[in-house]
Image (cartoon, rainbow, N blue to C red; front, top):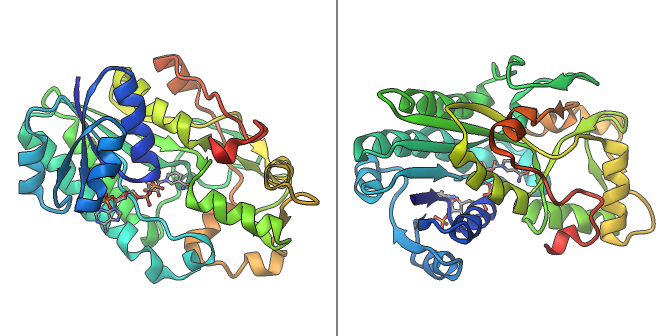
Length: 298
Ligand SMILES: NC(=O)c1ccc[n+]([C@@H]2O[C@H](COP(=O)([O-])OP(=O)(O)OC[C@H]3O[C@@H](n4cnc5c(N)ncnc54)[C@H](OP(=O)(O)O)[C@@H]3O)[C@@H](O)[C@H]2O)c1
């Protein structure tokens, strides 16, 4: 298939491109800057420099493709994420670029949109499993861009087109967030939010890349994508081991956790997310878990 990937130089985008090329697809990686070109071409795809906020440009670039995979994002790393302004770029990408891409793709005759989203839209569900039909917790203004993005994908899925929205677990691997966390663990600084007994659903970025390939077979709809959920106390131990630190990763004291602000507050939620729908529909399986030694180098 002819597949276009936006955000192709990002953590998720690069993994998606590599997995799609390995699966034999003809891939176009879209980047906004010339210095993204070697990154995309190094992964075996054709590159195009274009403005993802411009619907007309997207229509032109996406013409001739069967599928578009949108992995755009700009997540602030570490404690800078406490500042609402640090999310401005990420918000704009989800509220405006994702909408331009979905509309441009429809006009260009693309038949399928695969849209990256996140499990952090679910509310805290304690020890209960979370399937795709659980209501979301998106009433806060901060989640509006993700809602607009979802709406654009749903609107795309009319007139015989399909849209697959992947709610990805928290990424771990070689990405900047994980590198930051491992450094904090080595230095003995607190890094984890939430209660030790609460659940987290993780997804290695290599498995995320494979999930985009698997999603080519999925019908329109929402799908959770993550590994077996684990309690955060176990994640703390896995982080400690991977960092080669003296002990497990530390949690922020409860009082500090109440001050992190809306954006980081989601990371205090207990999210025991089930990916059974995606597994059943596509046969995708996670291959790298948080206790897989060396996961931060894979
Ligand atoms: N990290 C996690 O735990 C996690 C978990 C689930 C979901 N996600 C989400 O996954 C998405 C992608 O994450 P990622 O870590 O792969 O992102 P990333 O590496 O930070 O960036 C993705 C790409 O987006 C493009 N981009 C960034 N800012 C842009 C801007 N202002 N204008 C145009 N393009 C811009 C860049 O491509 P060019 O510079 O080449 O144009 C960049 O390579 C985000 O929405 C993130 O929230 C992350």
